[in-house]
Image (cartoon, rainbow, N blue to C red; front, side):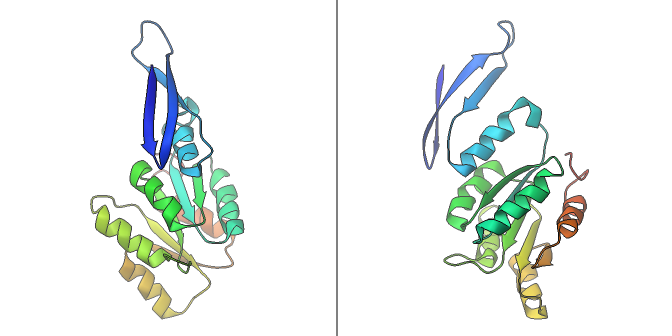
Length: 174
């Protein structure tokens, strides 16, 4: 059996019965697109039930840093350097927590947060803003846009871990 997923581009997937008497199928998605790779990770048996965290920052080094800290908690992570790449994955995968850079080119984190809250009103994902701005107005802007929390750069790993524990049910288990 061959399945076709439409997601920014067509991806072929092949399903194979795990047991001839069982209706369950193992689906393997082969892709190099980060969002589809996150979906592929979520389908793996060892990842069933793990929380998915998405980080969006225009600085790739911050995305890599977030990923390393999040994965240290045995959580799934998908990182993006633009809202355009992240939004389809957020809509499809509905991650359990989002880290958003407040100031990014083209579409900033505030606008992305508003898009999520407006286009997905039933989706109450915790959104944590990351920014170099620590003044009261930036904090207010983040909360008014629909954010739940705020971290000021440079980010200390323990603060990320604290936010994961605070905003994810069970810390690292659903």
